[in-house]
Image 1: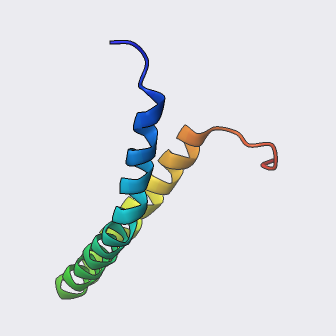
Image 2: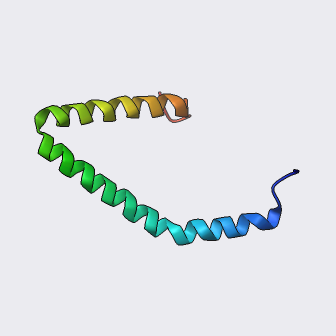
Image 3: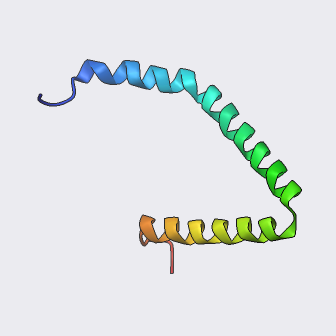
Amino acid sequence: MGRFPGWAKWPIIAAGVLLSPVLAFLLALSVAVLVAVIKEAGLAANLAALGIGAITYLGVRKLRGHRLGDT
C-alpha cells in the first residue's frame, strides 16, 4: 500500500457534502434528547452537565494549544 490515490479524495468529499445535512440533523436530535433528559432529571443533572461541559471545554482548549491571538 502506497499513498492514498489522488482520485479517491473526490468521492470522499462528495459523500461528506451529501451526508452533512443528515449528520447535522442527527446532532440536533441528540442535543434535543439530551436536553429533555436533563430537564426530567432535575437540578443535579443540570449541574453535572454544566461541570462536564466546562471540563470538556478546558480539555479541548488545552489540546488545541496556544494561538497567536491568545494572551
